[in-house]
Length: 261
Image 1 (cartoon, rainbow, N blue to C red):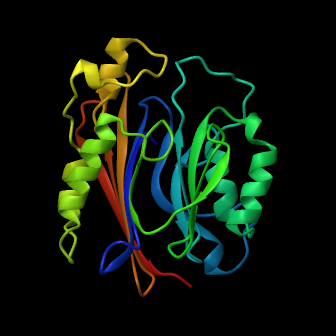
Image 2 (cartoon, rainbow, N blue to C red):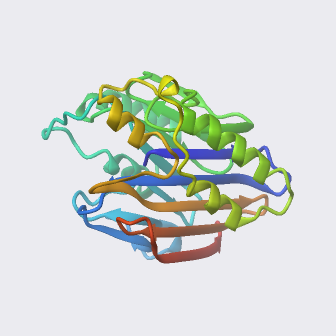
Image 3 (tube, helix red, strand yellow):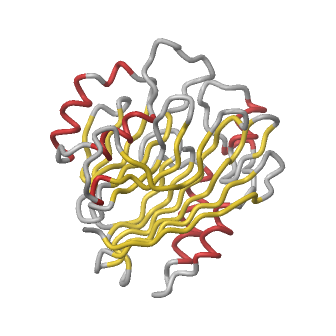
């Protein structure tokens, strides 16, 4: 994913309000949001993963389980060169969701093998206890009450899309009853900042500009899906997803609701 804004224990009605856009090449095969069995499938509902799925590597970018495990990942932008020997970062999310380790134990294991992956940011835990870990920040950060933004740099790095997204997000969630349509409208925002506001991440200035809005659309690459997750104080989960084609047109949507076991 490339854009996340979320509220953690900072809203009267919802413990977690999580909004995200996944930017990816349009030719990378993907399954939309659905409930799937983990590799260590057991005959109980708590082991089921609700997430989209990357069919190239078998991993995912954002998911939640019936037992309340939660994880989301963004890549760290460091130019365009990729090392084909590195392990797919989507497996980091998948492995946490299907495992039983508590967040601190998982972070210790991940820290030992962090160099197997290209740069990443990971938000993980549950709606009660969440952490941030990056193999570029080299630290584990507990998430306290508040509103946060994450793109392809460290947590709350003030990129234009993060500053704009957090401002729009705060306005929307100022009401007790959050309007889902308004959150998706925010995720479709395609306003580009001025050249002087752009970060430098090792790509050309032209490409940096094309990647700068919340909703991205470039030839062959762009925002493939938008997701909204709400978890209230009674552990009721609502998970919404919209998928888009290369023109930015919505092609399908999904909605799931359940109570954490």
